[in-house]
Length: 172
Image (cartoon, rainbow, N blue to C red; front, side, top):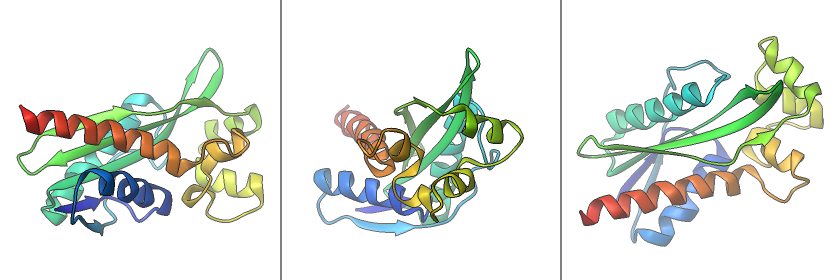
């Protein structure tokens, strides 16, 4: 089974590989960089979800894979606080698209103020942590949960939801 992932982000690709390998034997993985069709920093659940769907569809178009995944992180505001949100989508060969969301968590105000003026979370987190490529490893969730949940684990939850829905759909 060819499983394509619309990113080369290590946390996202590792999440898809780890979960898909549990349910599909002899899987081959392909990673492609495709556009999300949304802002570099999605600023709502709806925009983040659309980015994941667009990545899944664009990945499907480029690879013709059996399953094409799109994963997207974004932020939204509620009651004056900013939250990080995460969405995933999978496009099947027959054109069916399934989407699911994952964990949301509150961002500290010192991070939120930078996002409100147009900065992107990944680079902001690199500056905040004084490291490089935070988004490929712990991510904001890993930093702000004191390492209890990292970005890969967060996306594994979403991928599990998506694969569960695929398995249900395939039985129908």
